[in-house]
Image 1 (cartoon, rainbow, N blue to C red):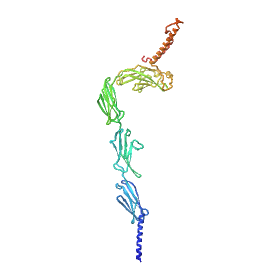
Image 2: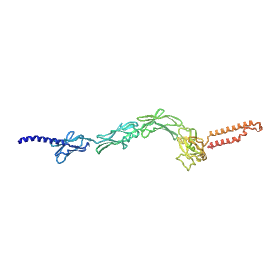
Image 3: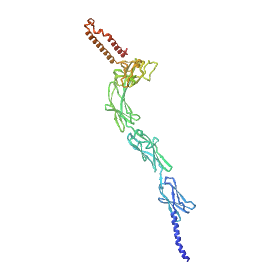
Image 4: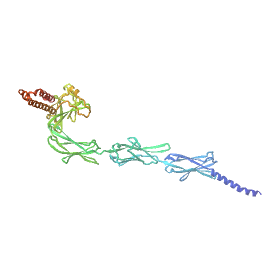
Amino acid sequence: MKTLQTRNLLPILALASLFVKISGSVSLHPVLTGPDMAYLGSRVAFRCIAPNASLPVTYELIGDGGVLMRTGTDQGDQHASFFLKVTASSEGSYHCKATIGGSTGVSNIIKLTVVTPASNTRVTSEPFPPVVYEGSRIVLSCTITKGSHLSYTWLFNRKEVTSSTSPFFHLNGNQLVMEKVTPEHAGHYSCIAWSRVHDVRRFSSSTEIQVTVKVYISKPRISFSIFKVGDSYHGNVTCWSTRGSHPVNFSLSIDDKEVASTTATESLTAWFPVAMVPGRDMGVAQCQAKTEMQKLMSEPVSLEVVPVGGDVKVEVEYLYRADSKLAVARLSCQVGRGTFPYISWLFNDSVLPSETHVDSHFQPVLPDFALADRRRILILPKLGPEESGCYRCRVRDSYDDSGPWVESVAVLVKVTDRILNSMPRATSSTETPPKVFMSTIEVIAIAFCCFLVLMMVVYVACIYRMFDRNRAPDHISTPNSDAPPVSAPALQLGSEMAATSSIDCDA
């Protein structure tokens, strides 16, 4: 009987044991926590916990290559910690397994990414070296020896470059692209390669690299000068460009034959000594400016020095304000011929000094003045009695201090307060302002008009005499007997005006 009961209990016990095993395996759900990114060479910790699990529990950390670590807990802890030193092979997927008796549970998966900090960062360029002409394209690259998961920051003259603040730069990964560079792109560039793991950043900075943007040279210009040493003359030809990057090779050709050449490394100007004789044509000169990208020629210039000579005269022009008031007087010295004239001005036979050599102790009272156009123009900004007088200019060759002067005829500039204050105002700034002085032509015109008026009066008087002959035949006389009362004042006026406009400055 007992044997039969025992046999009946065995299936029940087996089913109960199987139920315990099944229920234990279903309720075991371990959880793995740990980092998803880590720097190469750092230490990380994974933690595996099986909540509500009965002790003892065995934990295993499993990677792509199999079981990495195994540990057991029997002191009331329901979790286990696994510490790893991160290597290049540490990157991959991790999970943990918890075992209680015959029951096993598998955790979630964590994918670990290994970040390699940047090292040995430097800037390279295309083209290399980074020397380009304006309008060209240049690409800078931030290169490293090793590193992963990197970001890049560019610095231009130690200021950060961004796409929003610097539209002339294009950021593309580890590259800084500059299309159609200008001289403003020239400067010092550097980059920073950096990575970030959670709140930890690691940086690697490069050294600076200098980008040079060359400017195309402008068409060269040419000029020449002459100076005297003792009894001999020496010439000098100057070649220059107004813009461009050096070095520039300048060469001088005379009559299509190259006679000299030099390379300008610190400026855009070159000087060449040449033979020069006043009054003689020494040929046609041209300058050539040459770089690795350009070859330009200047306009030709004749190397002929014409000595000062011919007629020298002074022309006076009065300039008015918008309200028709006389503002300034402008005197210009017209020189008949001369390649290098030196002009000196005289006021009442006193030489007007340059503004930097005025000595009030030895000079007479002179008007305020300004010189322009290489002393060709004399400007009188103040007009009054002190500025009234005789002006003339004299000219000599600038390269010969002992050379003879060629003088102009003196002209009168006479402006009084009465004349300035009595001028009528123009109703519009576009109207022609009144003139203060009459020229010689105007005086002649007035005299001619007075003569015509005189002739008309005489003609009328003659006609009147002819019709009145029968009534008073004994009063007939020559036409000139009635002319003086009308003609004398008119002629006198003309002579006075002529005298006023042509006062003898040479007396």
